[in-house]
Length: 358
Image (cartoon, rainbow, N blue to C red; front, side, top):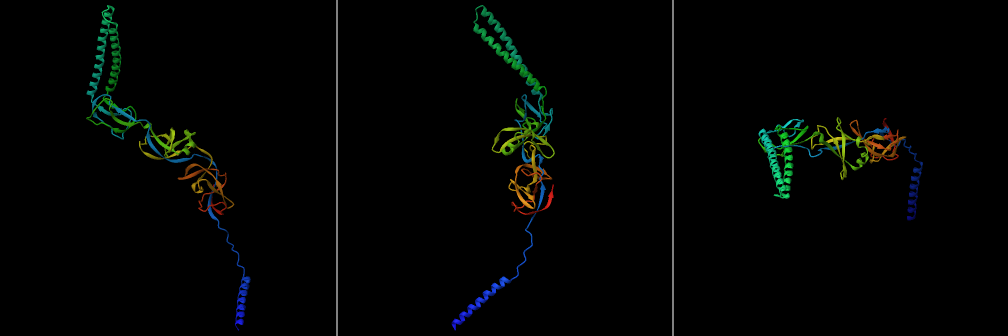
């Protein structure tokens, strides 16, 4: 009886397995999916190599060439008035400091007295020299005495020459006690006030000539190497005015090469301005939005709905419609370049052109 039950179990199991196999083999075949593979919609532009003037946004320091300008007291005097203040832009001939005229008269009198005193000494020394020469001929004085007076006369004549030059200087300086600007100047500091006593040579007013002001820009060494043979083509612009290249530093610092550009009267010493540097023109380059550039060294061309990686070299930037575009070398003329930035862009990816620009 036990044997019969075991045999029956095997028959049932075999029947179940056979039925499963039969059902699997006789089931209808499912229809094949007719959905196409996914294509990513992208925009493209047609590459047209040409000549462009690349630009670079830079920060320019407003600096001064040289030590600036200053007004010094030509003679010791009391200050009567100072009609200027820091920040004033004055023209040549503008009154800056008024000194007391009385002190001017005293300065002239002192200089004239110095000349007169030396003239008297020279006259006396000449008489003494003649007397010693007469005694020497009579063998009553030595040649050394004669030479001593002759040397004194030479020294006095040199002093008289200097005193006369000083008198002319004093006469010129004190002819007008009102000290005026000898150039167009922007005043930066007034160091005296009315009622103060000043000495000869004391600095009264400080400033700078606008023509001595420059925009100072530091270029990375890599950019400097591209432009060093075309410096006359460099210029700064604020969108309205253009500022010509002036000169470059002799050495390259760790930060790069320092360049100076001419500035206009709107530049204020010590300011920092954001300007655009216009670089020498480039030829055979393509202008593309930065969305077309991948990894700074390649773009993707679209051919028959397939992406193809294209190596390029970045050469600079331009401004177009208020946006910054890259100037790239190595893009074939007439190629369709994808400008939609796809994070999953790879060689061979299928895409669909949804917009094209010439």
